[in-house]
Image (cartoon, rainbow, N blue to C red; front, side, top):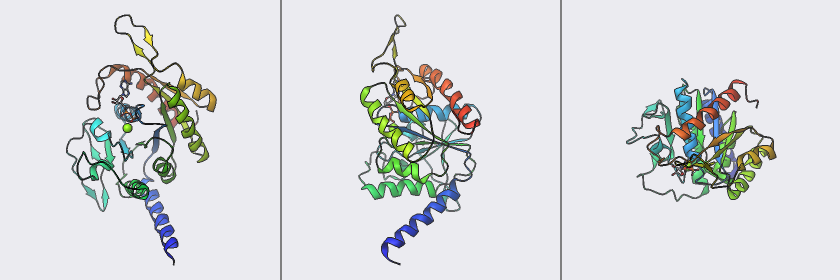
Length: 272
Ligand SMILES: Nc1ncnc2c1ncn2[C@@H]1O[C@H](COP(=O)(O)OP(=O)(O)O)[C@@H](O)[C@H]1O
Ligand SMILES: [Mg+2]
């Protein structure tokens, strides 16, 4: 066997391990965005909290190798890595859901990931194959932004994804980048559950008027253009910060409506 064949075989064997490891998860959702900073991780964590509140056993997989923010957002302080056999157990969090992140395997919290492409995609695939995914109703993956190798690896490696949730702001640049993202997911023939517009508006605390800082209806425009479900908008929330997760009322109100649509989508077996 030459080197190339050996590499192909190793990838196939890992695919089998991933399929086996993930086969017990009831539902798999991937959260994506065209660019960073639009609130992909915030939406992922809020959705996980909502699923947990409704009695689901949830795990969040933080696949964003360059911005593994999820453990902090889920208030994990000092993760203790435990094993079941030779599989790594997801880490429990104070918000109920469990979490698995590339961050747990970096030498220190402040270490930047400066790996080259293959090492990054390899790390993502290893997280998928070497984690104990038993006993999870819903896996929510925070995918790296954009349409590069890493988000592609997540989409191609996870078998039977129920649906992708696209997060955008109403800003033209975000909408434009998201179009590429939608095209990539469509090309892979993975279903898209719908679109969330984050930071939709700011509500004036004095007069209650809504100020559309990033323009209006970017999410709805995308939903119409690609014939997708608009899952809902989430307004700006004053003072939201990564680790003060639960008190944010505007975001939670928006998330409850979005959760209901996502849950219905899963119950209906992936039909919008
Ligand atoms: N609806 C919102 N209102 C106010 N701040 C928000 C909102 N959504 C996200 N943020 C903030 O914007 C920043 C980027 O959000 P994050 O979820 O980390 O984005 P991404 O994962 O897409 O890079 C964070 O500081 C987050 O707290
Ligand atoms: Mg993020």
